[in-house]
Length: 187
Ligand SMILES: *[C@@H]1O[C@H](CO)[C@@H](O)[C@H](O)[C@H]1NC(C)=O
Ligand SMILES: *[C@@H]1O[C@H](CO)[C@@H](O)[C@H](O)[C@H]1NC(C)=O
Ligand SMILES: *[C@@H]1O[C@H](CO)[C@@H](O)[C@H](O)[C@H]1NC(C)=O
Image (cartoon, rainbow, N blue to C red; front, side):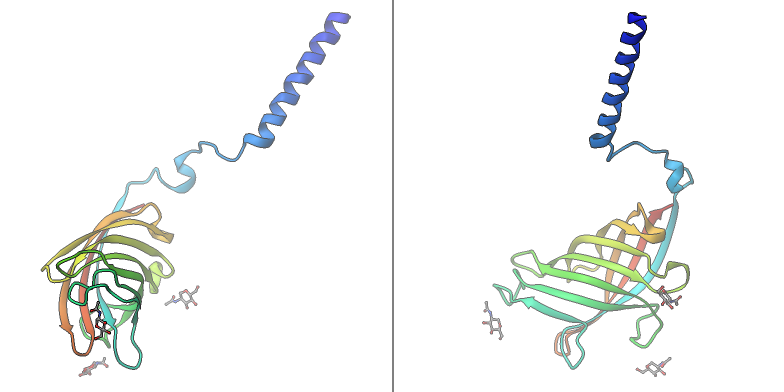
């Protein structure tokens, strides 16, 4: 009888220990990838959009919030943007999303930006989904490759890269149009 009581008491103590472990240590756990659809094969999506940046005029899409320490390289400058992304070069072609973020002068001796921006899509099944681009953009190079470091919505777990090619640039009016070819792996 005493033995039985001791066993029961030991079991109660064990349960109490397990319960308290659950109280303070249960914020993270391994789950099955199937819960998030990650057992499917990854898809590769390519899209081509045109990025319209204007820093002057009545309705600029971008504004310099930190002046550079060098006006020739723009080193040290920071410019916030909310630029339209269209399906073709003309500004009045269909807008499919926005490029929101900033570019910062990060290179001395030439113009080279650190780009940190989200492409926010607004059409069809892509509506509301984003990809995050973080990379180096030396604007006078013919092709600039930048990594796609992630995404949201249908681009969850995205990775990939973009290639940027300038299609139009006018210093006086402050307008630049850049073609972005994006290659994105996602589920
Ligand atoms: C850059 O140019 C602006 C406008 O002309 C001027 O106000 C500023 O002092 C210049 N900055 C440097 C670092 O030379
Ligand atoms: C777009 O603008 C060009 C001139 O800049 C004009 O010729 C063309 O008709 C416009 N297209 C649309 C769809 O508005
Ligand atoms: C995109 O989603 C927003 C917010 O849910 C909605 O207001 C808008 O009409 C949608 N646009 C398209 C083109 O589906």
